Length: 204
Image 1 (cartoon, rainbow, N blue to C red):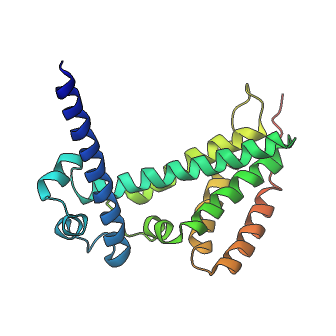
Image 2 (cartoon, one colour; image 1 turned 180 degrees about the horizontal axis):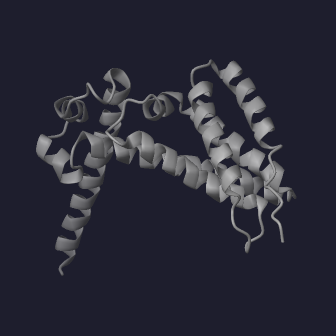
């Protein structure tokens, strides 16, 4: 392969990435403004300064745009909680209850910081089946954090997992409906209560 051809492929790759990013940014703005159900592909394309063909090159439609935005949001949330727990451990924290508190609080703080984006996903206005996917993904996140309570060879307490994931789902919906000060006060109360939860003692 010639140097010129390699350079051309790099330019095309960069251009494609820029187009994809522009489409996602436009979709986020349109979804926040009119909601997912009322949003049209033409609005997204127009705002992004792209073509309909380029949208369908990167995404299968507006539902795919919505899901891609959610995956990016979830990745940022995972990074926030991982960073918060890592910093707590680096500071000498080993108590699993406090680490769970740290993870839950970091997740809620991320929801408050990205309030408009969070409302987009927790408003109930999404593609068919998204509510179920949202619950499943939050449960997966909770599963990883509930693992802080257990030893590597012990199973996760299913009841604890359900309580924590359900509580977090409700908590997110409530904190994003308040102003920052009230939202953070509520987040304090919720995560303080969650931090008291302990796994059940299993019979030998």
